[in-house]
Image 1 (cartoon, rainbow, N blue to C red):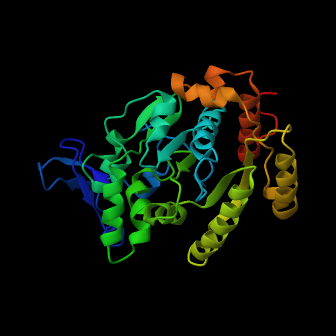
Image 2 (cartoon, rainbow, N blue to C red):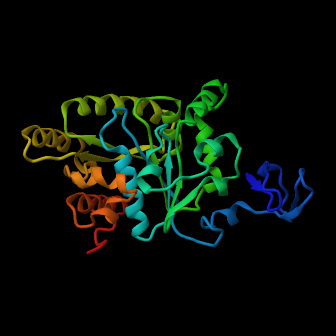
Image 3 (cartoon, rainbow, N blue to C red):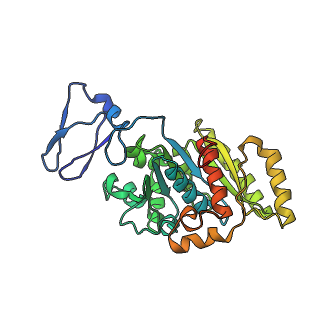
Length: 308
């Protein structure tokens, strides 16, 4: 368990197994400040701003595919924003060195995932409230250094992200993790942290090849992380004017069946919205792109009556 001194903001790691129930307070070894010792059951009922909250277990959804250009970040941002609009508390984690999630939301965080994983900044100051009920842990170029740190770790390197994100456990309804293209140590860390995978796949032949390769890599992680499951496949860039789109969608439907989500249609408004620092719901709420992402939010949340 990690606790933070309310006076100097330094972090302390505590072995819960050696902690007696009679111990009610802790003393900071840095500044000497004494403060009440939080218990795990207390942390599970806190919201991101410190208030009490109950509810079901936090869902951790990785938006991932090795191939680039399939709409991963667009899907992660608009899914997270849609869930927040539906009343859920959402943490969006950007693990891409491009750091595009912050750009798409029109915010400039002073800290993010790098500072959290290196311990340079306390967890509360690493995340930014980008919208009501939507918090962001930003990515960026500095994550390249984090990848080197992970690669140099000898033991349990695949759990570094899980350990870094543990202060946020059960403080949100959803954690949506956007991943970078390719297959690297940070992507593996994401998959060991998540318990659900959502795969956006553009309706083109090369993306299908990338999907098959990713599914094989995913199976190698599932061998060690039994709770991880492929839950959603989201076809993107659907264009009914193109015959190939219909053909590939039919192949996906035959192979993935109930995991297949309604397609996100090709829509120029989706590519315009990031330039204005807005989600699709803010930039063009009546567009096909907004309608399709609302449908995805209904599917993921299990609430088919949302916005109806």
